[in-house]
Length: 325
Image (cartoon, rainbow, N blue to C red; front, top):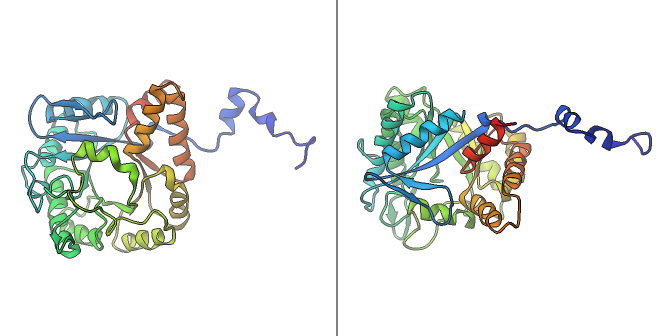
């Protein structure tokens, strides 16, 4: 094809032509909305670094879950802020923990909404790390026992999908085995298969109150410089019978999303993380960008890279725009 016989602009001439040849589509069905459930009553506290996102007590979580469902968003993912924290994060796997109570409340009021639960220890431990600490680091195999117990408690409370985010070796297998042994063979595991040790998580740590008290998470989360390692991490989770794979963060790792999409035949999730959200919000507040257009372009880029689903704090805003198209 050569100019002037071929003119690419012919297919961009008006809105209908552009719609007809559009290659990638973002749908409300692609979105998952994160929510932060806090212990207590009458709590609705906006997260300073994440405008429009709140720590909320259960009654407000349920009200927002109804809004999410009415917008057509199919799923939420829950993070918990417990009343108390301790070295082994007991609230994470207690049958009456904050997330377990939140699951039951949502399922009672909005049973059609899919509830995904984050399975990790960092929100529940007083040291802020993702597992049991021994000799100044997270003990992988001891942590697996707690993660399995946490996932089982979520399933018993009514969770539809459990999503381990801890990056411990072998956690998908440990969770799959305990779920199957207790009659929850039908509960899928959405693995945070490729999770980088990223500076983009800063606002989330305020939201989830999960900043480590010492050190960092680079001994268990992935080095941002590594690409080939992502294949190995994903393959481990595929071999352990994960049902979804996830890449987190998304925006700086679109190449990894495409790599995994080309390599594995499982639904692929991109996590549009807190820092990515906050950058758009901050720039839009200063009128440096058109916030809605940049938001939609960013989400569309994640879909184009290969994501089937996107966890995003923009989900409600994006759904409103998509519903009005």
